Structure formats: C-alpha cells, structure tokens
Length: 289
Image (cartoon, rainbow, N blue to C red; front, side, top):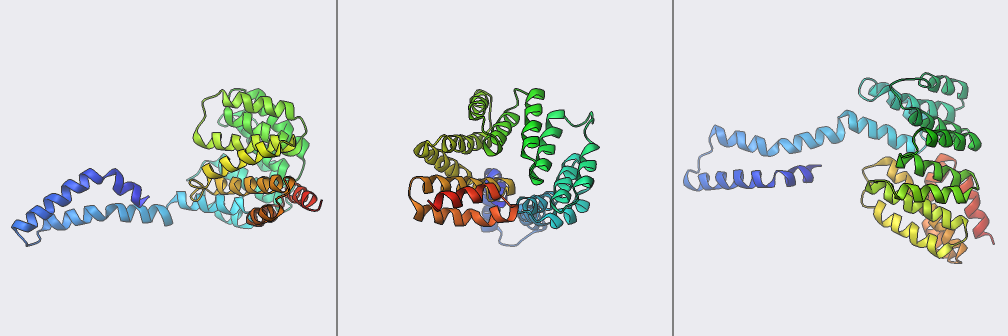
C-alpha cells in the first residue's frame, strides 16, 4: 500500500522535492514551510501503517484468515470487534459457519434463518452462504441444492454460475451440467479473479473426466495467476492450496508421484485444518496405486 500510494503521488512528490532542493540550494536554512512539506511526505507512511495494523479492514482480514484456516473460535472472537463496521449479514454468516463447525448446528441454522426473507439480502446471496453451512456439516446434497436454487434466482451472475459448477464438481457427478455452467460463465463479463477460478474449476472437470494433461495445464495456469495476487487475500490463499491439491492428484494420476508429493505437502496443512477428507482421500487413493 505504501508503494502504491507513493507511486500514485510520484509526480506531485517529484515537483515538491525538486522545489525543496532548489530552495535549499539557495537558502540552506529550514523554515516552518519546509517542516510542513516533510510532514506531508510522511503522511502515506502513517496512513499505510494505520490501515495495515489498526483499521477495520485489517481486523476483517484477520477474521477471514482464521476462517480460511478453520480456526473457528478465533473467528468468533473477532466478530464482536467488527460489529457496526462490517455488514451484519457478512459477520453473521461467518459466525454461523464457525458455530456449526464447533458443533452448535441448531444455533447456526437459527442465525441464518434471520436472513431467509430479508429484503436487504438478495436471495441468491443468502442461499450461497447457506450452502457453506451445509458443507461444514457435510450435507453435500443440500449444498448443491442451495446453489441450484441460487442459480434459478440469478442465472446471469457469473459468481453464482461458477459456484454452482464447483459444487457439482466437488460433491456431485453431473459433469455435463458443470461444463455447461462454466461455458455460460465464460460468456459473462468477468473480473480477473473469476477467470482464474474458472481455470481451476475447469481443471477439476478435466481431472474428473480423466483428461489429465489438460487438467494439469489448467491448474498450472490458475496457479501462475493466483500466486501474485493471493498474499493479501486470505480466501484466495485458500484457493491456491486447493488448486495445488488437485494439481497433486493430477500429477499422481500421470505417474509423477515425486512432484505430486511435493505440491501436496504444500496444500496438506490447509486440507487438514478444514477437514477436507474428500480431497485427501482422493489423493491417498491415487498415490497408493
């Protein structure tokens, strides 16, 4: 952030510093105006440190980081600090998933129920977050059903489309529909992040169809795109690890067990933290052949 701020102000700063140097060459004494200019030059440093360590955004990212690592009690501890600073729906849905993961399933469903008929929360968004709750309790059929209903509510939303496809690829076997959905998403206007996720999801599709070389290429492209932007985004870091896990499975299918194991070990801490048994069991089954 500091680098970006100074880069955006580079021409202003260049002019100011040039004027300052020129004046000092003529009059070496430092005036009150010079002190004000020096303070101005340091403002981006103060702002960047505040945002990085003390802002609501930093606390929110801390919660997401804990969420993406399955540190559920830490998620619950962060929620009160963010009340009034982050939308209630966002906080409550994260809180509900954490409660469900800790065994308080009925309480989690009650928390979600408050938003079931909310006029402020789009129905597709509610269903998408409800699917996370079903995933955490391993009710995968209901997770898929949530995304099917979300797709009916927002059939042109690329995020909904690819998440429905992802659910089918992870927990279902309707690969034809998943492929159709991914093709639909590619026809929509997409941001860079969604384009990268589609590469991962298409890789899973090709892996499931046993087109291992194609899958490997897609996972590698996804990885090269995600790695530069993921360090500051906890949920993208999660996808980096899942992309690695599926890449490892693909390499194992191709007989490259040495590289498969190296990549899998990078993803394994995340898989274990989130209890991703399906992915771990799939890798173990392939590597044991």
